Length: 291
Image (cartoon, rainbow, N blue to C red):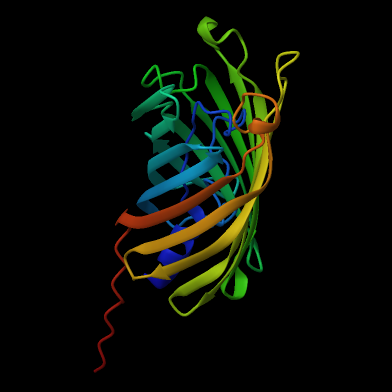
């Protein structure tokens, strides 16, 4: 079980999106895969992964508060493709956006996500993976990104000797954009970074993540940011818990209103739980009879 849970934490992940300017054109929350070795294969089984985070972006006399809950079901199948581990994933994320001044205080479902992922064990603790998935143009009308987004992840991980050293690049391409948003939905990149070490049941380290947009409508300012912070985790056996606290050290146009008030930094607390719902039974040892 210990080995299975190690790779469950490494391979399972959470997914999300938001309509606020702080989350760039990937329709994926920057930092959503931080703390996970996205390049590592995941043992066969079905896993539930839930990431919950809450952050505040301070403005003079007012705050922008955004909370996100991302429940994911990940099925690591018994099938392989060219020697890779095949995983199927589905997420139904939710968001609570509290914007001051009575602009909105909304909570609901947004862009459901489905994806397939291929992960390959290179040996020596190294692994690489590729994910392809779709954020569907569905969900509560005041919450969802009003477009369909094709998301691709390119990850590399080292998980030897208790380390988790991971870089995961997320690329989002939007299409099927609602006319109501005037074609202003952009494309973008996220980069999630992890550097942690396991000591017995404890995991300690740091995470970092950044995002940027491209293909903005002429005259629009693109959103960019980068955040860092510490992470701690604990393996309870059948359940793994993680928590990390991040602060943006760089922010550009994160409130989307232009001018000096637009480059405001976000402070955010994250928690994650990983639960194996089903794993194959361990084969019984062969019976040896001595005469």
